[in-house]
Length: 276
Length: 182
Image 1 (cartoon, rainbow over the protein chains, first blue to last red):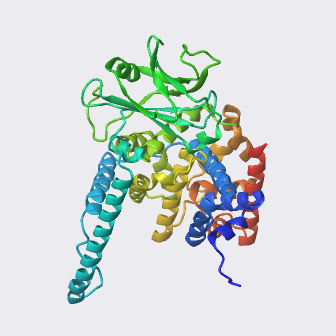
Image 2 (tube, each protein chain N blue to C red; image 1 turned 135 degrees about the vertical axis):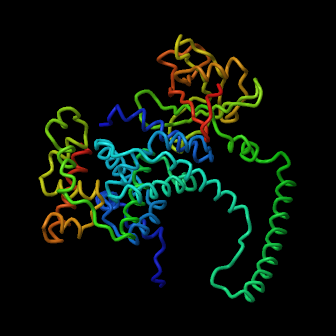
């Protein structure tokens, strides 16, 4: 019989609440060596109990840190350094590797030729797979259709949760289009939401921050997770203090409100004046 | 019991992490504006070196940009982010071979978290439960949590044998969890 133990088998050993709590506490307290910490992180996807215990301790750590006085603000140029590093990372990830460290030049050129053939083979294979997918799915998967908008930046987000609850079930994002009438609203469900009993349809409303007047934005269901906003509806989102999701089309009442959430304007990636 | 003052903040951070999972750069900037000072404070308390701390904060945000998908939705995103920054700071300190802050260098730390006034003003779970711990386990747990002391560093700081310190931490964590769960 093999003595090799899989990660999944290891995770089964950590089903006891007491063991999970002990490990999670040690992890959060920073009392594990780097190696032991890595092993525990490898177990997390396979052990919901350990994951829950770690989340619970993480929140405790955050609570403790939130009680302590702030030390100092980051320097003014730190954000630019982060921005530059991320942008450089994006560019370098798209460029081919220039050198192979530690390999003599003559060998490098021979090795590069092998890599070139491997790359060409891989490219051909990928092209064949893409072609097959296009032939099999002429309309294209829904997710792929959404991707161009997803990589844009949202102008507003509303983290929605049930009344008095801290857990977010759905995030509504509003994307400003290039012209009036082309802006869009996107619905993103959290992983928890599938465990919540929800009505088949949810009707969305924006509450004006000054007048508290409600504007109907539209309905979302399993098939419809994004739609275009008219100019008045976009303005309603931009001027809203919160968004509401109700179970019926009628004006929101206590009994029909399912989710609410503050509407938050996202600041631009680079420092720019407010455009709304 | 959740601190209602933190609820709105936690919701915002969680929503921003969800946006980040869609590679939304504005969300990263907003996240930076919302919590970079808090995260830098966590890192400085462990590293005790503001210059190195900024480097760790930079690494944390770059890592966050690439690994936001690892947030599973279990627990608050803010808690998850605190742990990410904290682990990065501990790794950095270990690689630099720096010693943590001593109790004498920051005497207000334990007083801030466990003083009677503080408990009266803010009677939410963590402070109340910390107050209930015996002094030595409480010191050990807080020094580990806030300043990233290892077991051996705790033993040195608290002038106690390693085995005793490990027992204090274990007992302190157990009692803290029991108190928080009731």
